[in-house]
Length: 218
Image 1 (tube, rainbow, N blue to C red):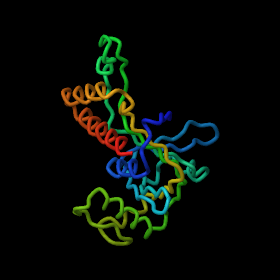
Image 2 (image 1 turned 60 degrees about the horizontal axis):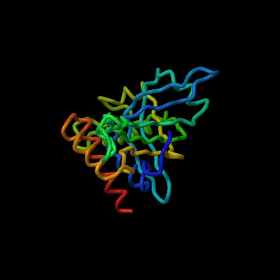
Image 3 (image 1 turned 60 degrees about the vertical axis):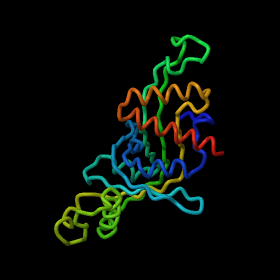
C-alpha cells in the first residue's frame, strides 16, 4: 500500500483510535503449494499494546474453515481493514484558478493493515475466555450468556470453533483525505460530501476533518 507522507497517521494513537471503532476486516493467509491466498472476512476485537508493542487481535472461526492448514503451515498473516471511503468527483478537486473539468477524481478512505503472527487457541477454557472477550467488545451492554466449558447454553458449541490470537508485529496505516491540497479545495470537498449526504460520505467527511485536525496539531 502506497502511503504518502500527508496520508500517514500522525502517531500510533491515530490508527489505534480508528481501529477500535472499525472491527470488521479481511484476514489474508498464504495459500499452500502455490494455491492462491485465503481471504476471510471476519469480526475481531483489537486490544492495544503498551510500551511500544502494537497489541493483538482476538477472533475465531468455524473449525471446518479451509484456512486452518495454511495458518498452521505459515502463521504470518495480514489483517486488512478499510472503511470511511467515498468517491470524490473531479470538479471537487479542480484547481482554484482553473476550469472544473480539469479536476482529477479520486478516492477517500482509511485503511489499516496489520501484519501478525497467528496463535491458534484450541484449549476449551482459553477459547471460552477469548470468545467472551470478543462478545464483550461488541456487546458491552451484555445480553448474551457467557461461554463456559461444559455449561449450557454455549459450552457445547466450543468444539465447533477455533480461536485466533493475532500478535501484531507491524502496522501500515493510511488516511487518504487530501490534506495536502489547498484549503479551498479541502473545503470544497468537505462541502460536497456533506451535500451529497450518503452514510459513507458523512463518515468520510468526519475522517477528513479529524485527519486535518491531527495534521494541524503537529
